[in-house]
Image (tube, rainbow, N blue to C red; front, side, top):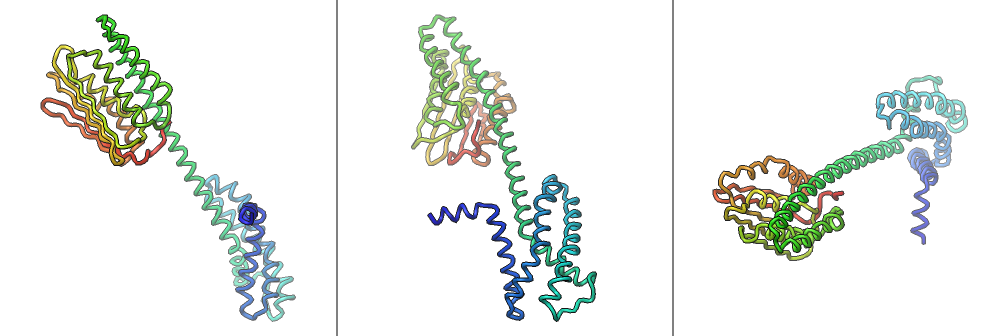
Length: 355
């Protein structure tokens, strides 16, 4: 109850302002009062100093800051602040001190005149010191808000880019899958019905289950299995396909991040007229995902080499850089008889939610 009351009290701006001015009077009242142990007089003098200090602080915060500083007109803000400080110090603070405080509370003080430089400088410094904390907090708030705004804009930019990159996967994948299904229908294969069922599962996952920043790795692997099953139906027994997966617990991963490597293996490493093979291994243990995709290197097949600098590779690499900066490694081995891709990802935490 008491905590809630205090929290509401200190969240009130007016209360904070009142406490600040009281704290200023107490601090300087005690500081100056120790010289002659006359704390009453010291507190009284500090109270009479409030009008000039308050004018400077509130003009700076509510007029100069919005008009100049927030608009990044820093030079104009400094000039305007100095002008206000001089006017307030000379016209308000100096008047109160010279005509009222000195005759009534400092009878032993003999001033040589109103516009004495040393006394004017002391007055200016005395007024200015009250604005240090409020302006410092305002500058920090401005800097913090600017940083947050910049981070928000950068995040929105990255999220938009990720969405664009992810959407590029769908048409390409769907086109390849429909081609596979078309090939089965042309051959009047009995596997066409199974292929339609597999395709419907793929489409359901793409349209409904994967429309989120992260999906379970189990579902993503099941999605890959359905795709591989479709390819098995298309190639029948003309290629050897091996798919293995093992995870020690449930993880989350960005959807459609692994499919480009599998697609690439079937697209460039298989042939209906030549004996070929594809090996896919996915392991997730101790917060690390390891994916190995290897396919036969066909004679005179230069298309797969184009993936390294092609749109598909650039797409997936961009997504990896955005989602897992410094948390992944991607190795491509061009061997004599095969192409091998090894992807490793630290799955402890996504670097950025993908939308």
